[in-house]
Length: 244
Image (cartoon, rainbow, N blue to C red; front, side, top):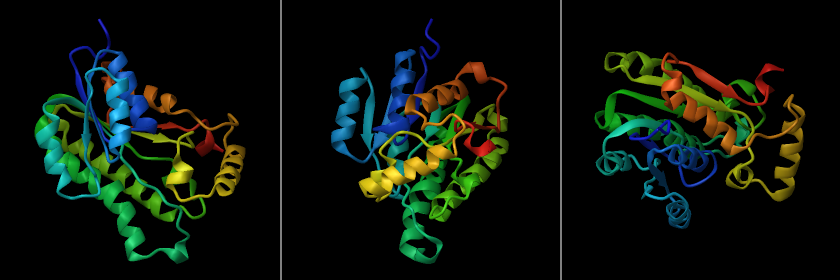
């Protein structure tokens, strides 16, 4: 029997990168998967790649979208709150707009989603939240993004206690530098992205960026019964970067 046969999972931000890799892995091990995203072309690509997937256009920055998501997602055995947004902003360029655009997606979004989805999650289910080592690393230009992920870390600790009466496990995965389209999404030029990757790689003992599938493997573990006694934890997957 496949590890996730008969299980149904939601992956927010599941149309690319870590989210898509996780959705593909869960489906390959028997799960029924629901994913969200904001780009219809990417969502269609997921539909074409994963048989039976339910791909929903849903924007976590929209406060009204959480209720819609709960109505469309159905009953769930597990949730991976993965949708996120990052732009490098030096501390002296932080504005109200730049603050809100990251906190609305990275903090308000998953908190409203979880509030709306709580009734859809089965007792004994499991939740994984994508944090990041950015909350620990103190990288230049990353104060806003790092702060959003620190807020999520705190949220996981509290949610663990609040969901205990329902026997729902709550954990986080904290990725290090991953080979996705982060640079372009963060507003970097090709040269800036190359320089950024070179500098970050020097800080990783394994000497490379991770792959999205390596984070997906960690998420699948936390969602599975293999992690039945893992609760309130944060699994750091960063090639040793945070340990230097």
